[in-house]
Structures are given as C-alpha cells and as structure tokens.
Length: 352
DNA sequence: TATTGACCTCA
DNA sequence: GAGGTCAAT
Image (cartoon, rainbow, N blue to C red; front, top):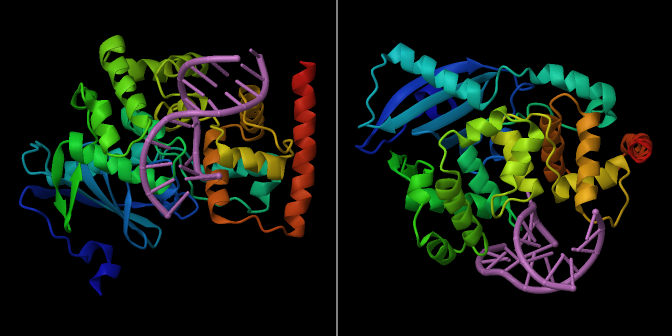
C-alpha cells in the first residue's frame, strides 16, 4: 500500500483547505523519537493516524508528520483564505523553520545524553530512552493545557483541549474526515459564561480556573508581551508571576517554564517524578509532595542532570510511563548508588 | 511553615 | 485514583 511511502500517501482535503508545503528534515532516531515526544504528555494536540504518522495543529496550520528511515516528512495545510506571498520553495523553508523551532532542533540531544550519562547511571545503563525532546510550545495553550492536567489523565486532557479548540478556536479545515481548529486566543476565550460553559463540557472544577486565568491575563495583565517578558525574566521571577494565576501551582508553573518559556533547566515534579525519586534515587518513602519536598526533589534533579535538566526529566518521565519497573541486578545497583547520592545531596542542603 | 480535605469527571 | 490547586487550620 502507498501509505508506507509518506510522500505518496493520499489525503482528502475539504474545499476550504489547501496544502501549504511539504518537505523533509533528516534526523536520527537518537535525536528524535517522534511518538514519545508528541504523545508523551507534554503536548495534548497530536493524534496518531498510523504508526509513526501524526497530525496536529501549529499556529494556523494543520501539520502532518511522518517519521521513516531517519527522516521527518512534513506536510502543512492552511485554510484557503490564508494569504501567503511566499513561493513554494520559501513556504517549505518557512515550514521547516517552524518545526525546527518547535522541536528545538538546534539542541543536540546526543550531546546532552552524553553529559547525563556521566552523572546518572540510569542514563548510562540505557534505562532511559533517547530521542525524547522538549517541545517549544505556545505559552497560552501550554498554560491552559496544564491547568487542565490536575487530577487528570492524558486521554481526557487531550479530549478537553480538543473540545476547547472546537468551541472557541477558528476552524482551519477538514483533513481525511477530521476537522481541525486553531487553539483559541485569549480574546476568543474572554467570555462571561466561560466557566458555566466549560462546566457543561465536563471540565469540572478546572472550568473556574480557566475562566479566572483568562480574566486575569486579559483584564489584569492586559499586555500582549506578557509571556515574552517572562521569557526574558529569571526563572524565579517568571515562576512567581505565573503563580499569581488562579489554577497555577508550582507544578503547572514549572511545566510552563520548561515547555513554553524556554527555561530548560526547570524540573517539574509530578507524582511520576516523585515516585522515580523514591524508587531510584533514594527519596524517603511515604513522603508527601509538600512544598519543601518538591523543592528538594526538583533541585536534586536539576543538579544531577545539568544542563538541560528539564529535558532529562522528560526522558526519565516517558520511561516511567512505559516500563513497570522490572528489577534487574543492574537496576538494583543503580538504585543503591543513586540513593547514596541523594542522601549526600540532602546533607549538603542541610549544611548550607 | 506544614498538613489536610474538597474539588469535577471518568476509568 | 488519575501527571494538582486552593483554602482553611
């Protein structure tokens, strides 16, 4: 079947949709694991069409990605009314640039891995997979997604964000029977009945958080360059700004810092990372994820995995979702060593 | 400063 | 219970 050959696979477009560009980016599997990166829980806007083929929305484009033979094939689609002055070649370049930025391809993952291996034998022993990249996402979208993420699972978050985009975002077009929408802007979300409507859509208590967050950003902050300002602020300053937003606690703030504000060293600590810290790095059992505990775990990993500790976290995290912790000899050994490291680290903290 | 329960919904 | 946050104590 032709579907095995990316360039020849057939697409059915609605009348309103046109193909904008297509191209290829050569990249090795150690630099990019497409599935783990897109579906691993940092973005909630990608759908797997077939093995190694994904469709999602970036800006006002529907984007189709296919990974095969060390190459990332891409096709961009836009609404036909989107006017572009670019010729075919420049559109391809522009699209490649968007992907380059989104996947942060100037970051050399293999080099980072080498660094992490030096300080952490879970990397050295290949217990953590390669190819997981941190995506550079849109801050507003990222923020809303992670407000939705509390007490929630990937599947439902994805569904909620899909619904949110369908209701409030602009339609792009229909590709192979599925209609795609832009993520709504702050103005599109700024509606007096937002909470009520989102509750009807089964957002639960997050409906209020989203409504409050939108009100705050639109009417209290009221600054189009708000997120850009945070990008150029220090981690501490940007974090304390984000914490002012209703529905944003430390974990969500850290996710936004890492995934859309370019703070590559931030390590968000969720229940998975927490349990990784307990299982492999000797954090005390039964310890709740209190604020001081969060700080300890986060800064421990930050020190262990520098630089780009947030990227290491994403890789370690994805592994946790996959494997139900098989306990081989080497794992036990690495548990011990890292346990010692953690104790030592805790001592240093206390003494300083 | 740290701990605890409620919060919505779906599996 | 699920990749948390808020508010009260």
